[in-house]
Amino acid sequence: MDEKQHKCEDCGLRRRAEKRPNSLLARIWRWHTGWCPGWKSYQRWLAERAALPPRA
Image (cartoon, rainbow, N blue to C red; front, side):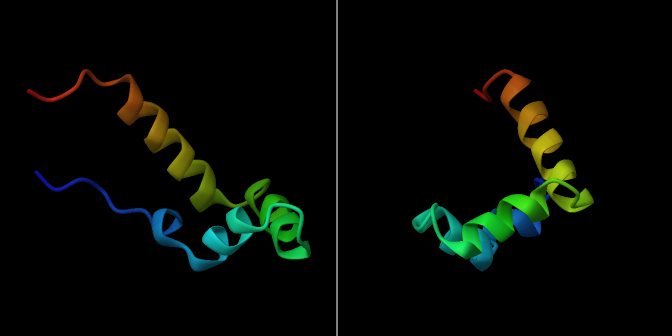
């Protein structure tokens, strides 16, 4: 079974913001994640995935 692929997982903007957490880009990224429905969906998906038992 294929797992759902979220765009946030491979986002170039996110990667650049994580490399330089004190930059203006990182501040814009954090602001964006406060209201972005895609980011919220991605966070729920990560939480659900972490709650599942590991596959054998």
